[in-house]
Image (cartoon, rainbow, N blue to C red; front, side, top):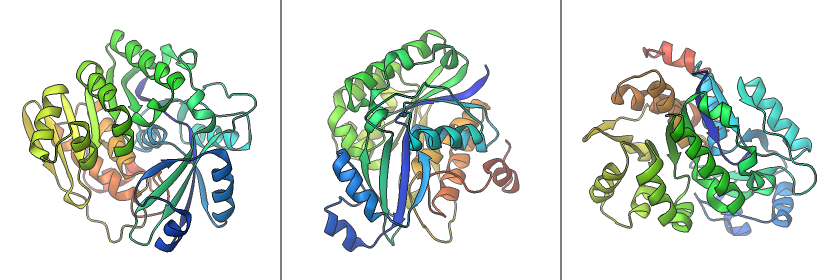
Length: 329
């Protein structure tokens, strides 16, 4: 294997800015959720985000940068346009040590962007223009890169257009044939509601490691009973990791439940990327054949780092942080 993890997802530029709750009401933005918007609304909101932090992002993309920060080898497959934001995305990912060679798309639409309003409680409310990211196609899937990986990591957001869905399925098929483990994050409760039956079939038939938060796992199995959702997920997938915010997380594996405590954080500044970095810590530890408890603990460490500052990617080298905290890496 030459890659620990290869991610496949929506290649997006994140534009983050602290905003009061009144801004959400003024602009009719759903708090704590991801809402898809068109280019005109994206252009309007971009003007309002006049003092923003701009960084390459996207869920699976954030995860593979976390893998690289731990000292792991990572690759990424995603579509940008041949424009200024696309060039920024490419530069940042290669600088982070992530293999990224998907050819950019010429012409419109432009590179995707996610405008993230971060309220004083650390919640992030996302308005996402998907642009070129959804035009990833099966022909963009780098089969050799996937075959070289121990784990393929797929983001649920990519399921929103047929072209991207075909790439998603193609990547999973290549991974299966190569005995590469397949991991999926459900991404967002609204994403689950749009694609519930497809996700359930995917989880039951193709996924080895599933990531979800509490709301997403309840929605996937259409129940208000968390124990019932856990049971259904465990029956469908070998390893399931469910994050529960300040309650930590639960990992279901080999018929057992492991409760993972959250790492202490002085202040939650911005929850953007918490789930993405949780997946990074978990998958990095899993690729190193660590125990379920160690996978969960390293995941918690990575999540705690990213919520302590603005932005979805680590500001502290995660390998150094893990070693300082007494972890094996």
